[in-house]
Length: 312
Image (cartoon, rainbow, N blue to C red):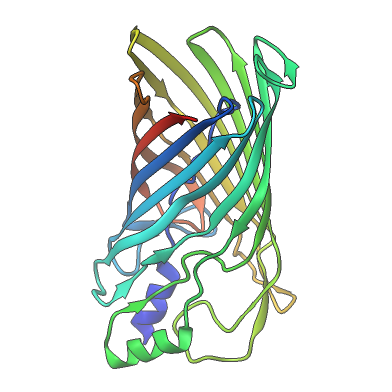
């Protein structure tokens, strides 16, 4: 059981959500995104930001994600985003019974372009957009059942995939257009979590329901983006976002859990090819590199995306 306790402390995953620029889709255009995300780590950051070996060796997770976005008007896009989506496979080096499989939260929202060439306020050198939405939790493990699986020596889910709380959030996007090929994007997402009652967050016998307050999760990002038009049918884009995610100490039954705040800074070089065919599509690949953090994993991530565009 001591080994199990160490395992439960170790198994958290760092999978990036998909930030975006301040553009919106043209009216009547449907964008479909499918993504594969491979996340792995064998070290962690402690509360002081120092690295130490993960207690259960290397942990790997493969996540499938997707999104549907539709241009309701030339200024407003509505979106259904499951990014990150479902952990379809996971592996823990020192415990072949443990897994991190299951669904992440679903974001439902709308994005409006306030400033820009096609914005409510026209501007040729700057774009500003704002979005609002709900983050709906989809993971709800039965921890009594998972504990029974541990005792029986069966496969078990080792950690809650998301925090189980409903989130209300806002996103802000700002682009400064240096030229027709180069712009710099600033992005922020802040999710405020509503209190949630649950009887545990790891495999243990069911106990009394307790109220958890996770506070918020905020993300800051800066991303230079350069696009090279190869020809009339192909654009190549490179970008280098720096992404910083923060959460505060959370509370259980009104009592703050000391040193539970997290932070994680990473950079993710991307390259994308946009094919302007009859049905335009984009292929994009990136590799996330951890730079610093606190109470998080020293996690690297490989990301592949396929985006298709359909005009109605």
